[in-house]
Length: 239
Figure 1 (cartoon, rainbow, N blue to C red):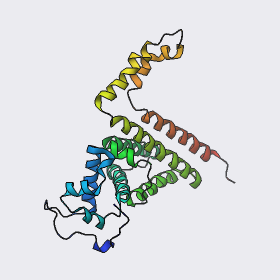
Figure 2 (figure 1 turned 45 degrees about the vertical axis):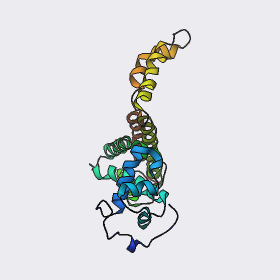
Figure 3 (figure 1 turned 135 degrees about the vertical axis):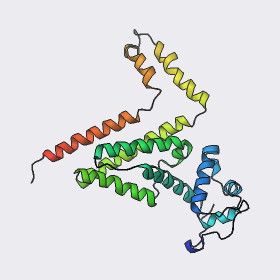
Figure 4 (figure 1 turned 30 degrees about the vertical axis):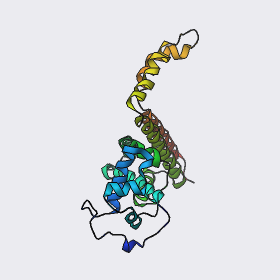
């Protein structure tokens, strides 16, 4: 796609595609997301999208200026899928943990798209809603504004980073994933104590633990540190 722009009012396609479907931004994003999971980044081409939609490729310019614009919409949709399943309870730590775990699960549900979009800033509706929501949770808990922003930053970057890391692993062929898991038992589990005493002492734990994501542990450590910080803030004498 290029930077060709169509006025928003003119974007809605009024005739069905060859497959009898009326195009919409939502349909294009959903189709692109499916194609990415099937074919990777190469799926984001006007020709392939048009073929999948049964539409003239040029009609996609009514909705997106170029493929990067579409990629931002896909990233925003992944955020939206997390927000639509999350309900706050009023317990700031439990709410952030639940949101973080849902973000991570969302990345694993769409691993190839997550790897492509985790580092993007969309400036779109769902992302704005997520920023507002998380800051609201932190400010409502009593964190001062500057502290709320720092914790928000760490929380989101941690969730996105682990999501991309674990999604990249999940996107590997099954044989490759199984081979990497086997290394912990076949290689690390057999290192002798006289040359690698710490690995030998913890080998059974490494074999058991390293096959799983460490995100839940990392998330709990972050939230524990934030809770300690909040206790310190509440304990400070007022000026």
